[in-house]
Amino acid sequence: MLAPVNIDKDLVAAMATPLVLAILAEGTSYGYAILKRVRDASAGEVQWTDGMLYPLLHRLERLGYLVTEWGVSDEGRRRRYYRITPAGEAQLADQRRQWETATRTLGGIWGRTLPAMGV
Amino acid sequence: MNNNSDADVDDVFAADLLRGHTDTIVLGVLRRGDSYGFEIFRAIREATGGAYEIKEATLYASYRRLEKDGLAEGYWGDETQGGRRKYYRITDAGRAMYRRNVDAWVLTRDVIDSLLDLRKA
Amino acid sequence: MTTPNKRTDDTELLHRLLDEAFAPYPVTSETLDLKQEVRGNLTARTAELVAEGTTPADAARRAIAELGDVGILLGETPTDAPIATESWVAEQRRNRVRPKPAYAVRTALLAGLLAAVILVLKFEVFGLLTVAPTLSIAAIPVAAALVGWIVTDALRQETTQNYPFSRPTAIAFGVAAALLTVGLGAVLQTVLKFDVLWILIAGGAVVASIILFTYLGVTSTNRRKPWATRLMNANGNVPNAFDNDQATAARFGIYTAGIFTLAFAVFIVLTVTIGWGWSWLALVGGFVLMLLVLARMLFPPAKS
Image (cartoon, rainbow over all chains, first blue to last red):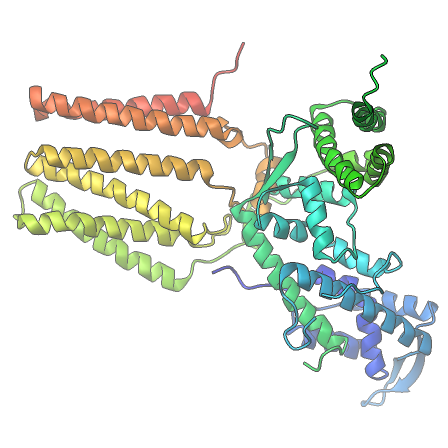
């Protein structure tokens, strides 16, 4: 029996853009919530930092994939929210497609395809 | 597996995603039996349904890394014509690493799929 | 040269293009090896293209083009790049794998049992205990099975530095160790009550064990984890001949089998002629000889 398997953090980092866009596509959100979503989905394995997320959000904003707007948190404090744009949705759709292609290819090579989808 | 016509050279992102796993892909080929460079290249090409032809430079770098880390051993064949071929054989460490990498990939894929909302987890 | 051998001309084209591609770069044993490896692969690639209908000349050019920049090929491994500066201790801590509790308990129990069996046999040999002959003989396979199990179990565990052996390999090692135990047990029986049969069994079991160990030693592949391999290479561990050349390791195994077969034969002859007092020297001599051969083969003196 080998030691427990770890998440491939490099792969998650390579997928940072589509992951952030996908989270925003679910609904306008703010920095901490995005970090928490990723941490929860990976059962605590992937803990992105502010230092990693905010430069990415700035870059995506420059590219026109999202816009920022100011709002108010539950505690009544000013908070910066991020909303995905149509250009962002298009980019997300394209990268999703490429991810699925790559995943299907690797799954085929390694004999680990997804059961229900028959890919 | 159908040949996805979407997969062409414009899919830089997908190509990048695949390139990161070259070592594990090569180990997967070697698991089935010792092979030399061109055979490995062809096996990968067939396994991807012809969608991706991996660059030779990427493969040679991969062989070197695998040898350096003790995951594969290289040895010279004894062909008499057309030049000797360098074969590679997977080691026990290579087998273990392959299993570990594939398991890690499956786990990571599932996490990313759920975040990308591709499957309702 | 007016030989109109088109096939040779086209093979020559590939070799010429390959030479041109590698020409700008310094020649080292590493680059020569890579060139030969590339040559073998390109030959196969051009053959494939030709089989698909490409002209040999075009095939050669296309194959070379697919190779890309040779500089990139050569520069891929930064062998002079600073290698892991992390110390062995730090890496060890980072990659630590703890032994499984179940394994620890199992091994402790088995080892305890084995120790008990050995103690009983020891007392018997020194006359402190009388054991029924059948029981004494039955102890041998029991001890052998325990030894085999302990060895196999141990090799199946993942450690901080090594991956486990595969199940068949681990079992084979266990069998070899068990055979060795049978051999030692047989020697013990002969000490209790001289019987040529036991000596033959001992000799057969030990030689078989050595042969199996040799085979396993030669065919087993690396199972050290990459982090350990990298650190060992970086710290310049002393390379020995067995690491570099499996033929040497195989030869050593065969020499050992030969040495011990001879030692046992001499042991038997001496026992029958001179008696117990001195015959055991043959076995000691065999062991010493084996060590000398091992040292000589493992670290051969530099050729002048």
